[in-house]
Amino acid sequence: MVRYSLSTGALAAIVAVYFLWLHPNDLTVALTLLILILLVSANWGLRHAVYLSFASSAVFNFFFLPPVLTFTIRDNRNWVALGTFLLTGIFASQLAERARSEASISRDRQREAERLYEFSQQMLVKADVIDLLNDLPQMIAGTFNFTDTALYLCERDRVYRSRLDYNDVSAAELRDAAFTRDHRREEERNVTLAPILLGTRPIGALGITGTGISREALDAVCGLVAIAIERANVVESLTRLEASRESERLRNALLDSVAHELRTPLTSITAAITSLQTAPLDPPQRAEMMEVIEQEAARLNRLVGEAMEMAELDAQAIQLDLRPRSMRDAVELAMGAVDASLKMHSVETHFPDSLSVVEMDIERIAKVLQHLLENAAKYSPPGSPIVVSAEAADGRLCTSVADRGPGVSDLERVMIFDKFYRGQGQRHRVQGTGMGLAIAKAIVEAHGGTIDVTSRPQRGSVFTFCLPLQQKDRT
Image (cartoon, rainbow, N blue to C red):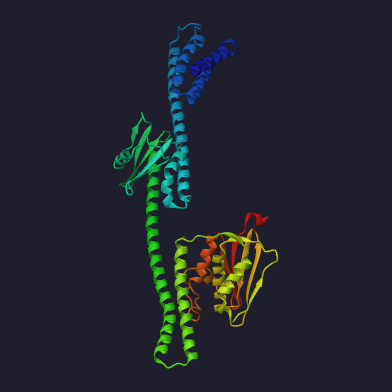
């Protein structure tokens, strides 16, 4: 009613100005009234414009066609002019209404296209496509301003909901909707059910509570969801295949490495036992054979222990005893454990007097240092020094073990911390399983730290691991 009143008021104002003051010709009045009709139609719709067309025809006849101030028309040509004016006003109103409607539809389609683009971007930037299925209903509801959303997948026979307490759409309804071809709308519940099709194959259904989206846009949403579901299935299959291949590769590498490493101590133990049983040996020789058996048995025990420790670290089954400890204590503990391996090398330690304590499991960190020291002793020339140093920087305590070995190439730096990997040029010269650095890396990362290596060919390598300092130590 407000719009009808405003239309009437605008018409009255034009009539008053033209009739009382300006006195223009009939054509000017008709064109002015026609412009008013078009403006009303473009902004308020066809109903108001049709009303204004009849009202304008009436006042045009009453105030401007002779005889004025009466509805009588003497000249037949004025009848034609009046009828033409009325029809022009109505047709122009229809055209303006159509243009307004199409513009409104175009704006709605633009908003839907923008939301579809935003929705597709959200799906693409989602790192874990498996977890994407759990987030899809909430993403759809948030992007398209639905009250709630439910997603059903045929292959998994599972319903994903935007809220745990959202029960407007049942699982049975979604199952039925998945095998239909048309949308189903229930106005009373304000619920829409739509099938999700990949080509002609049904893969699920979408249930939404709310309005504000066209059928075409809803089909596009279902299409994007279908692509996301198929992508998740493909990634899951590839992940399983890759895991299977990796498991097979690791198993073969483990068998090859362990078989190779176990053969040497077992051969030594067998030879020593055979000598003790068959050959006449004096006491020093028997003592030497017993020492060989003891050393090789300890080596076997170490190999088995490394394999078990690597399995625990891979399964994240270790419990860290984190306490504020000094890195000096961890280095001393590690050097005591590898004293036999360091017989041919001198170890230099460089620690500042004000070295910060760090929260760590000292036995695990000592194990890291033990592997690094053993690695340095294996690859460094006899008599060369091994340098252990530590310093605090950027909120971390970084500890380094430097050797004088052959170094690590840039290509091998990428793989040096992988399980069972050993240097190309040293794997047949130096004994080992390739698990030491992998164990060290897993322990450091379990502490929230990092480990890396820098190297110069034929000049040695520096293995550095950094652990985060406590907040009070950073200030």
